[in-house]
Image (cartoon, rainbow, N blue to C red; front, side, top):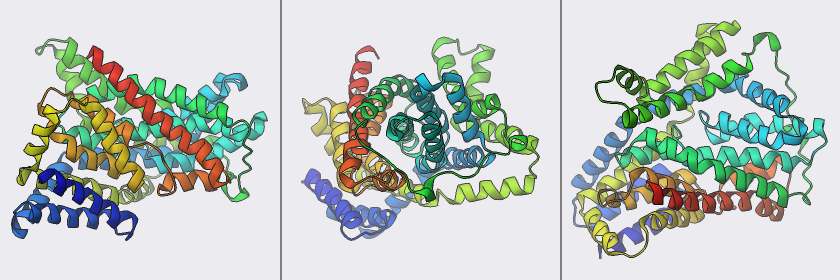
Length: 437
């Protein structure tokens, strides 16, 4: 009976969001109350559990996500993203421009939310494709594949960060494993979709073609731009490596693990970016603070949805549904990583949002963490599934279609194919990695 209640609850969540167009945060509240009452909890206990879940989830995430939004805003406004892209294109040259765009998408995508990275980089793609005389989609898709992978797989992005915190896993290890899985996923999906798109003509609308040029006197150098973008990744990764390879009393391990705490790594990166990307370029501190405040305000709804997903998870725990699901999954012959991937993929296809799909699947799969399943690989499996089969209910589908001025059919042949490839190559990579770890 409990599993049926959860299934009805997930179905209700999908209906409220997709059919009734209800805000996802409100939908999570209603579904959590429904599951709690159906499991015999009182309304008061259900609401208290939901509030406790929000607090537990956001308590460990608010620093990381808030600082991440600030860093992304600085990189976007300072011209660092454009510097990274243009420098990589010059370095790789025309013959390897796809590698350049792929790397640009990866570096810019690490600290920046997907939609922001898309809007910042796509006009640059238009310029690069036009100047080199190359088909637009051949240049764009490798870059977009990298953006999608960082969004779905890697901390400090909201969903993977929230999921690994929910599973009480190692953020640094998730990042390292994620980087290993990301490389083949980006290469296969980016180049594969680009190759298949050669017969599709894209002529972007003039309104979407970037017209602004960088003021070279007030933009950071390419080295500083790249350094600030990937600084938190290095700090977190080095911290995880130090924990695994250095003795506890080693002073280097103590320093690296302290600096590599996700919230500390993000704080260091933000302060570094404020100075090198903004203040040293002649901008006033007051203006910089105003801009990063706008960056934080843009993630308010993302934070609410993440918190609400944590509330739903706590309802499952409070009502003992969690234990019931765990007992079923332990006796199941299906690989839990595949089950997690399929659950996230199903919700993604129904809802459209990768973030909601990932967080909802994580709440369902959370009981598996205590039964021999790696929380880091489980996070990556869910992240891969959450990207599966993007179609008309996904805002990213329409963002791509409108910017590249494509028909719905051609958007399916390019964007949807690329996202599906990322999801499939991702779970294959996770399963292979599971053999060795």
